[in-house]
Length: 558
Image (tube, rainbow, N blue to C red; front, side, top):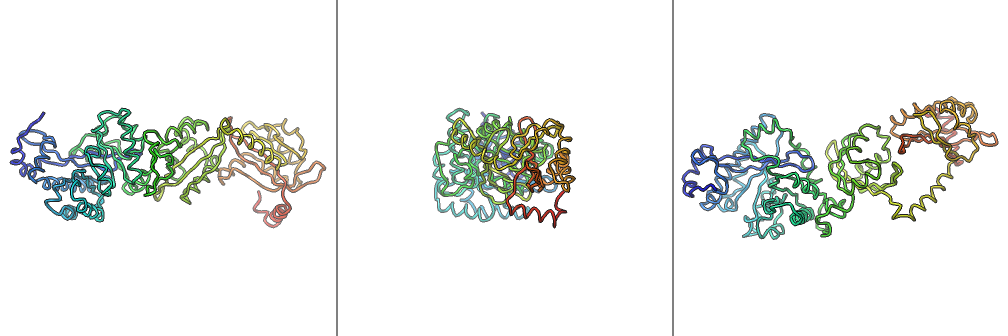
């Protein structure tokens, strides 16, 4: 282990500051959901010409002991300002920098004034600086430090509690002070075993409950990242992503690295999303408050409620997160993973997901929790959505899916079967059509005596013969156009409405032509898209309205 005489540190400190032997090194912080850089921590490194690279533990304690640490911390801040401005000049995306302050800094000077003066000198905004404080700073004189932190907050600085878990009074500190971010020290957990997972889950669960964001430092393995993502830890920092780098190396890293930097305009968006508690039995309570329910049964396990975070940008949908319960439910609906859902939405017109699209639009418009029942691939399910954050051009939905399980809801299944017959009885005629194969699959239901011979013919021939035999002569041309399924499909895609509907006079069994509502409905089943051809009787008032449209507003019809 390296050893340096304390006097050597004191004798060479000022010279090292002046000549730049002590410099800021930068370690990026990664947003867990996006895997983008959201900030960076500045760490002091002393590259001594005689002794080589000195570890911080060798000189930090000495500088604190000799009450010189404030000079180091302010010099690191100046380094940050140099780097920030160099990034700005090179056109690189900007992000916040965090700096560690010692408790002794506050004894030596007015740190808020000193820091603000440096930022003004270099034209760097306070929002670009995060202040990291260890719990030892606040062990004494709570009222004094609370006033200081309030002043920093009012000036626009964010305050992080550093090394949570490394001391003995962390919970008292959380009770007495208002922090923006809790930095969880992974080093006090030497492994990622079950005991460690329980502790980490409890910490994240608690932080969400009191409205503090979470950052895990010292992350080194993929296993740690996977678990931290699962429990909802928002930010990660450690050797897995990068070792601390000099300013030159960091700027080169930003210019060439595969990893991108978070858009600063979206930071508040992601911070809001970060407050979703992945461990809560009721994760739709996304914004913490004094009344936020804390349920210790949620610790360690993911939410028993299926939960996904779905980003909507125009017509593009991206799943940022989905827990196991959600993935299990979507498999029941016919998708193996969220990627398949994204691909399906990207490759098919919006009308194919019309009911879901309407629900999402309602969620975005109202900001309320919306629950609707849906049917797909022979599965009935309830889908819940709530808009939890938005920017000018995109939204984030919290979503949950729960399929109808007939083994646990036999009574509901029987009622559904019973009343579906009642619904079907409101129609006069239902035919199932396979447009792709140019055929009528079956006459599903009919109570107006339409000849069954049509189902034996090719679709194109059947619709022409139907128009000739069953439709009033003046309306036959319009009916033939109405049942041109190439036209129908294009019309549905343009209007984003899966139903094409117009009034026609249809022959009754006694030969009389009765005004009826005729619909073509697009639908999907397991073996592909199909169309339902439906005829339904009209009420007297609906008939009068339809006649008025047909005579006075015929241009609205096909």
